[in-house]
Length: 440
Ligand SMILES: *[C@@H]1O[C@H](CO)[C@@H](O)[C@H](O)[C@H]1NC(C)=O
Image 1 (cartoon, rainbow, N blue to C red):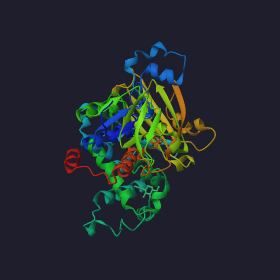
Image 2: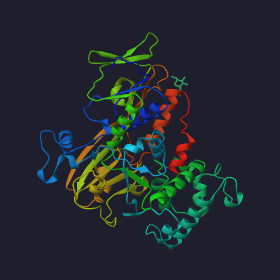
Image 3: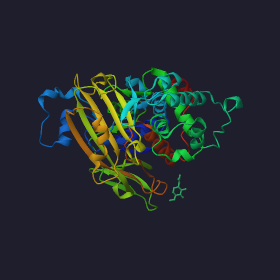
Image 4: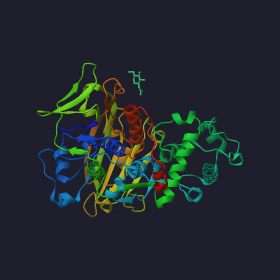
């Protein structure tokens, strides 16, 4: 470890690995360390033994669950929008050559006590059970407008200026009711709250276009997911790092950050060794004095022996329960994968239900999600703090990521990667043209 590195990255979570990959491709020499003897940190995928060690200390996994190596259980499951930013990061770094993907078979939303597929185009809108007959036609007109609206062609605007008019005004123009707005805003545009209603419509229109284009790419849903679980991402980035002369080291606890007189970081201490670099990037757990808690997230990892009811027996699905539908301030997410994704033994399904905690009884808050699953074979519930950096890192050159929120997609992780990149380099992250074409 006596070489000189440009950047030291601590923790092999998703955000850190993506950044480390982007920096490597940009020509930086990166040393990446993790205190654990496995990849992934908070966002690791665990085998059966690791899963039981974490949630049921002293208890071994029941024999009926089969072999350890058949299980790769994501602690924080996330699906990738096929045309989304995460896929652009993966193609830009070329880490895709170490990964295999499979599509997620459905994207569902909860409305008035039932779940149904999110309609991605005009045809699906007309056959959707989410809306009554007149609302379906209004939804069809709305989706047609979203698909066709182009800045340079005023004949497509239908009298709406997306830079000025708010989404509330757009919904009113098409006459869409509150329940329809819920699933458009939360299951298609993937907004985390309803602040978007008061903002210019452009961002939401673009998010819906992205959703629809991602569905078109593979057909069944806008989402894809890596075979063997998200834990394969850090390993793929570790292989990529080696190509660029970087180093990944596991089982390396960091005891101390070293600073110069002006308070800028100059390296970190691990055991008896000190490694030097001008910048340190880490997840909140490596810099507890520099982060603040903003809330908590509750997650229930559930093992099922059947597909989720009312989803036409598909092998994988995302279900969004919009906050308004159940009188909450945060959405509840359900992400389900199965042995088709090489994450559990044959005939098992893994469903994770999550949300941001609002009360003293977090498990009760995800009950609507748990109720959708049918009989639950085994359940592991955890509540984790949500943390974010107090400072932006300019002063000490220590750049800290945010904890993973409750979402079951990558949008907020990608926002954090962009934010970190700007703080670290002083420039916005712009990916090269070539990769946009590849991803198109
Ligand atoms: C970081 O925060 C400092 C104040 O501590 C501010 O002056 C600076 O503009 C911020 N930099 C960025 C990139 O946001």
